[in-house]
Image 1 (cartoon, helix red, strand yellow):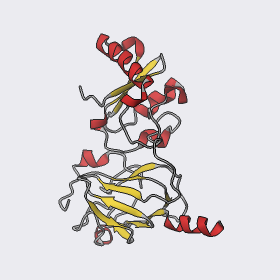
Image 2 (cartoon, chains in turn cyan, purple):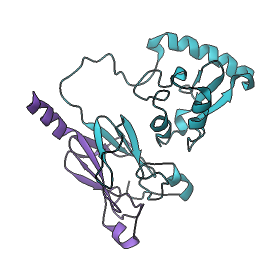
Image 3 (cartoon, chains in turn cyan, brown):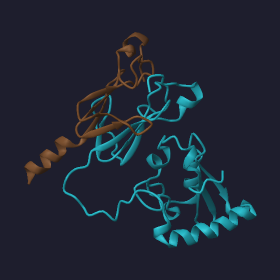
Image 4 (cartoon, helix red, strand yellow):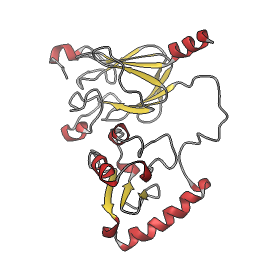
Length: 173
Length: 70
């Protein structure tokens, strides 16, 4: 839990905690609420992007609890303290970790999409791409998504974290 | 200009969900395994979606035998 990459974000009423080591890239959060959860932006969580009730609703759908939320009045003393640290850090952009996107000059060449086969998990895709659904229709575009590989997602063709529950394994990787 | 756009569009990665079958990927892409090693690029590939291929992450036709549907 004391991973230095952990972050917390607040709008004054609720706080969202981000625990990257738990994330399986089910991408539920930003498929539901890109105004708040946008992995292409730094910081990637914008608590002003939606009402607390809606944020909490989407956070509750995270299959791994890589994001969780609390009312600010329920924060522990140490959580309150680290909130101040995080606030300072985010005012100072050079301390932020993550892809160095903005600094690079814009190139005309199209970048290949990056596709990752997660061990015992989904296919995670980042970049510019199109998705054609099983009926030939174009699905909602996104800058990142994850496709189910275990065959049991309730949200096909996307991953919903079911692979963990059913113990899907991947012996060839 | 329209030619350029058409070219870029052609290069854009396309993911095609094949009903009851694999995921077809075409266009300009790289596929890495979970350790970051590049295992495929640019040539069209079919990745298993049913969970039962013996040749993961690729499709081996198992979905036909196990009656995969969604």
